[in-house]
Length: 128
Image (cartoon, rainbow, N blue to C red; front, side, top):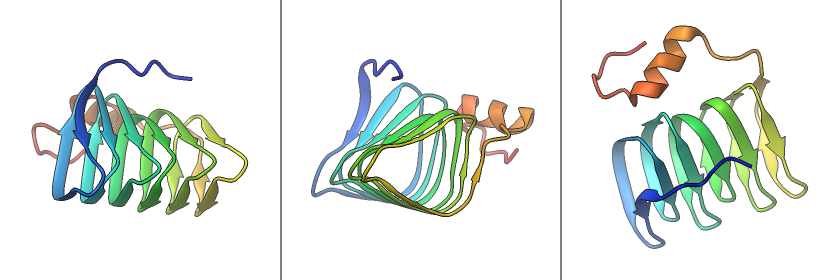
């Protein structure tokens, strides 16, 4: 299990965010996010969390619902209550009993340019 560290940002239950979220460190989503998420570190989607959009992070731990494609540089963990509809690109995928995943998975790794874009959190706004 990855090191959780200090949570830098938190989208609580009952809150909504639409747009682009770019971060470093650990971010937890327990509310609703529609858009894009870019970060070089850990994203946690809690049991009540819903993300509709593209995700590019270092590591993802999900127990909520995700509709969209996921690219994770290190690891994706889908816990028992998770539901993912979309494609996953990551070198390590763990799906716990009870978690659901409908899509395709590419475990061949990310290209170097994509990895660098994830690590920088896409702060420059330049697509890799």
